[in-house]
Length: 135
Image (cartoon, rainbow, N blue to C red; front, side, top):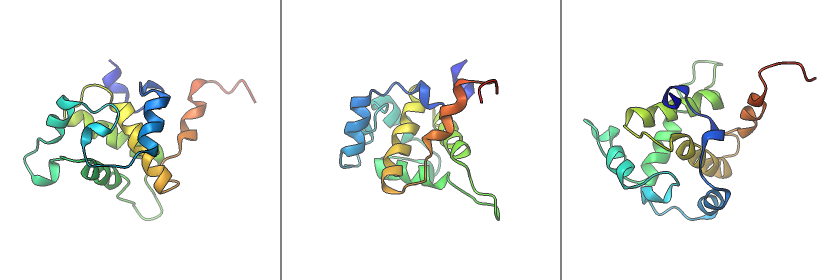
């Protein structure tokens, strides 16, 4: 049931300590350095019919993440929400069955510290209320 709802940073189970450690840490290339990625996920990410489908290190995962930021269509740019959804559903297609929102959020936050604007967490702040009663 939760699998069909897409990316939601509030479903990330990454603790603040783990997130901060990942954000401050140097990338080594080991996929398990990304919170939420364990040995089973590493195996699933490495599968693919084409070499371009196989992700075997953190740098390739970041490359995949960045690829989902496009393609732009003229003045239409890929929004933060669309970008995160693309990555979340790609992880689902790769067979990653848990921690998808946490993985996406970790990569997004890490890259946003390097490339400000690639992820806007504030886009998710107002999802708590579905009504416009408060002005």
